[in-house]
Image (cartoon, rainbow over all chains, first blue to last red; front, top):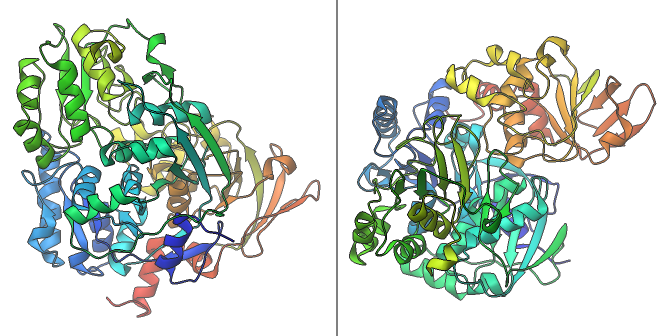
Length: 421
Length: 176
């Protein structure tokens, strides 16, 4: 019987010939584990055990990208405390990515190819680790178990079932991977893939560039899924080989692999999608919400802060200005993306449009900079739309694609981006 | 923790979201309560039933539907639910991060397809973690689930991942 890519990776990570859904396995990974600076629970857990060692200091990367540049004193304290700990347990200096050489953990890890095709990739605490599944890795978070992994280099998993999504059709102009994901979420709902893996396949996915694939996988958790994955193809292999000299052996699903369910979606006529507050899984086409007044916009986060996003935002914002009274925050995901956007004249376009450009970080998505106040209405590419996520509980967040956010900020109301393209 | 447990079922229907329903993230975060387990019990399930922490008895079970613990990998509700005295969560399906976090907090969470067909609110249940069985003591109906392997049972016996690691360190099973 055939196996899915996830089952093959988990068999390898647990040293077994083959595994099946429902099995409990102890697993390890040869890849580095990454952790954020302001989520220092893993190190605290290690210290509470009375230990001043980790399983392998060279396999730990610390990325200061969640809070980033912020006025919050606790972020500075967290930075000092984790750096002190990292030095104590012998984590090499080059593995500590502080402000200036850091960005959003998932975007940064994707850029560096810390996750590799055919391997299990672990991050300390963060629900959006599935982003790295775009590289053909089985990517999950350690969450509360982080400290255990830091000590032993081992964790465990219950082998998840896989749900396959065959996506066909050419993405219409102005419709992005983000819209495809939100559409699928709207169709299958929050229990659609409970505890399972979303495996994206089909010609639409084949045609997507890597930036779009990362975006597609990023929010898998909102279908109830544990992670998302895309079988590596030539595009993946070229992307990885350009960025790392680490050897790797890609794995792919067998044609006769067993899936819990297979969905087919044709996105040829898909409209841009918007997720109004407060539920994360009730999704509407932009045409149903057009005209709703907004006074804040955000382009950024692990879902939408890559070059693809900078480019489409630039195309839409060129020769336009953000509507009076609207603050548009555009946060490139990493220093490399920032530099490339600068080289391509996009930062100039954003500044001419009077958008604000913070340093690379999660930033506004969890309300760490330009937080929302009571009464604010924000259209955002951030991952979540629930009340309080980006600041005040009494602000409203409409989640949407980069194109929709850019167009909406020009008009000061929710706007279909297709007319700007 | 006993591997065989008896208690009353508290049945919750619909989506049980990790932040709002299973535990009140805003309240817990705002008060800086994340690290103190016993103080979180009074927040268990208050998003669905504000009186739940007062009504639940030590050793009772929560019975849920699909995708229990939906959302981010936040683990405060695991602490809240365990802190309220709940002995185990039994559900049709769960968020995998929630599954790991519950077990790491010493709270068994059992995915058991069909559990809602044999259990209604207030039923007395017997749960055998090692054998992989839930029995409705009132109706006599039984249902099976994949039993936990020994390494997870040991972790649950110890009260969670970190008490278990502390035991292993003390016994010299992992280097200090």
